[in-house]
Length: 263
Image (cartoon, rainbow, N blue to C red):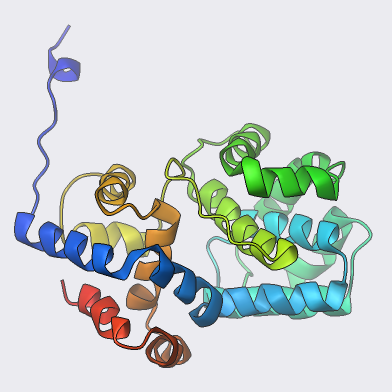
């Protein structure tokens, strides 16, 4: 028996950079994250477009959850993938989600990899999504995003902090905001999606695992991890249209956001 599990791990950390990170995020605040999500993120526009075309909020939100669960190992930019999804289902409203994805995914231009495994994920989540009523979906949005995360993790046999699980909750939050015309902040307890870009960016500050590091930064700044993810996304993405929209809608705060890129 060793003493390893009783010893608190000491991670390398650049205190000066971390302090500046916290200072900038506090200055930006939750309102800035919301502006980025609703006016800068092209994925939000894609969801708004789909909702307007479907005119069925229950189906709209179920599709968004399903699509988020297969949004990994993309063969194109995330924004392009969500617009492809939006346009396809706007023109082809599905009666059966599994059957619809069996036609959609194999012919996708921006999500060509690991199609068989992704179709199995749709099959796995469908029995959970299918019976949900709009009132149950509304309750998840206003009172139970953590509960939704836990249910998705159970159904998908994944960790609650798994990247696709927490990303599905994030996109559900977008969809709920659009469908119910109300902003509900993400819970502090839902982790940041630990993707390649976040992982690499975190290493600039610390050797601590990204999920725990950004959870700590969230507590210090008062900005939930999923909203921090939104602030970091334009910094790490680099798509020209996104940077243009950032400068247009965030005003002086755009300079602070871009300063994060140079930390």
